[in-house]
Length: 351
Ligand code: DOR
Ligand code: ZN
Image (tube, rainbow, N blue to C red; front, side, top):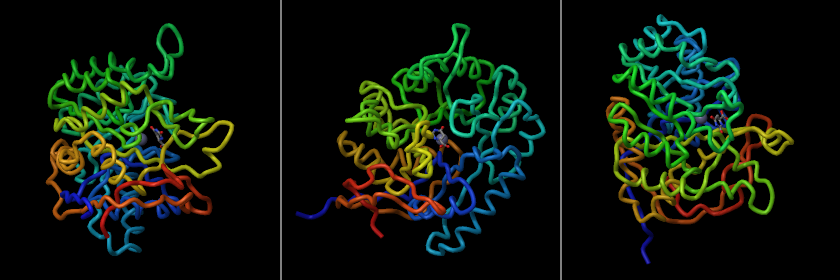
């Protein structure tokens, strides 16, 4: 029987952690060999706060790409990290740069390298106003950690953020917002109802797994990410949104490399590494839902349209041909354990 194939316009990854230095050089090729562009998250240590930091980071990525001449088309798009001290001038400068597409809101301590994040979102209102006025997208890690009653249950943190999100939208109706890595039915429904200025990215791992994957036969640190995996009904809602053909949902892997020792530990880091098989993993999820024909819009059209960039030229072809994921990939002097390590992925990108 002939192998099934699907050809798509070259896709983009609208949410990617690349890290820096040797770590970045270790993982960059996985993304650059498939994606035309990726929106690079700013949660380095220290964070990428200013446009000049973002442009210097971008230059380091471009230098690393010089060692990979086949992927010369790859264009890293940058974000800046919002803090309590971000000023309106910082926003005006970022919005004027063609290479900076968004400012990222991490509620303080919500996730990896977010200690410098925002402690009081209300106080950032003038900054959101400047973003609205200057056309800089607000990219949000949408989780609330605490309320008046105390610490919020980890499985409820995303749904609890809806109230905050709603008030930002109400005060800034023209602000364009991407709710990153949505994980719950409630947030999906909120985004669907919010109108064309609000969109969401969805990861491959949240499409493929529910929270049982964290505890299957024992604790599974390589399935731990933030926002944490949710219930099966939430996964079903994500899958329905991703395959719906709605332009408000698009591809963002949140691929987040961590050295093996820092995940397989008494207090393991959050993050799933998926860049090695990103598009094939999405293809599996879409195919299982009988919606492979909807993958191109999600992967290659809707994100570019939302960020008001031209869609990529060129194509990539996926073949339904199983391959076994290596147990580890090199990560600077360490190793990282990719999603599906030692197991099969059903699709692959044609070379
Ligand atoms: O699981 C995650 N890992 N979630 C995030 O929000 C950050 C990321 C990282 O940088 O490792
Ligand atoms: Zn992320």
